[in-house]
Length: 589
Image (cartoon, rainbow, N blue to C red):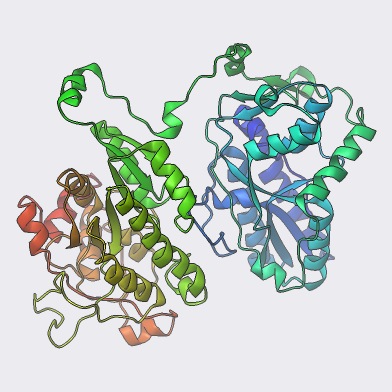
């Protein structure tokens, strides 16, 4: 069981090379040693939930074991790198590997660089508890004995070559952990909690789907209150267990390699400002753009725009924030979950937006096939959550721009492939091949009852970022085989600015949000071959062959974009837009 690692995120920002040496090279050495002996019956590699990257704040289902790895800090990047080596040794040499990815662990004997023992030792000394940022970051905590039982189950029942999440559905904000600690130590949270500068990047949330491990018979047994009490009892009974840990108790410890190879924990230079009672507000974190004096005259005549955006960690939600930055539009990302009405109300009452953008939703990980086996979770977000947000917005007289999908139609006798006859906004959806599409068609129909909603049907989104795994071009360029069918598609670089303009114009109703015309898979890949990679080759296969490797059928259609073209005459056709916004900017010289 390979638990050894450098694990503290703060330290990884100060000395990332040490993390690469320990976590990647160290793992490689251990794998090689196990390979050479030929005696190992199980190699359990202990990884972390952080390799998945940040979970969307409104996600109702956590990352499962097949989710994409998107680490956001040096620590999690080295853990992801180590996982690749483990997987390679399993494939190349037949080493019997199993990987685990776990939530935060706490309990007796933990080194106080970690949040809970740090808070306990600081509280024991009567010192303030430092909170990075505003403390809204959400984490899941498992008591160490429960985690030990999970490893016992995985050792004896786990399947070689598989990955298992070790997680809990119970989440807590960091600020709430601090308040719980204050309560147990009879401290006043208002005077005992100290807000300090955030990390260079601090993931808002990690959330795991732990059903796979539960199917082996494991379950969390220790409730938060009981685990916290047992942990505090151990530290109060063993206050000097770790010796001098004053360096680890600083708000931002950094591990530096001193002469002679001695590690030393030091506080980062950014903390010198926090002796003052004043707390600096990090506006870049909350996404608020303050208009410059040059625009203040305009603001006085016309109320300033302020957008509330849901879907912060999603592709479209992230791009909307960047566009607002570029256009100097004030915005904040919603913190509430779509299915929780009280949280949505709190967002609107606190932020006081002029418009709401909903770019949140369940599309499935890694694709829509996921929705086929997670139907209630898909309904909860795509249907219930979206209706909830629309209703709250209506109560407050707010326009909601809702990013929907055009994957609710398929070619039929009245709209045959290649005819140029597209489905109009008023047409009834005819595709229910996937459960994802079924929920999106359902909610679109219900949203017709809300006159404050502007529904934008997006299809097969494409952007100029050809490294983004969600980009349709990136996807098909990586497939072993592709079908070749003409489809309507959405070029985000051209159409997302139009969505902001639609909000400004207070447009409502349903809109086919695609570029006019259609383009086939082969036509796109031919452009890719011409502009990006002359050596690129691909292989086609039929819909019948595709059906053998997917769970749910896929939608293929043409949407009539004449309504959008009439409102925005400058809108380019799909092929013109592809060249201008995607391929020309990425053209290889």
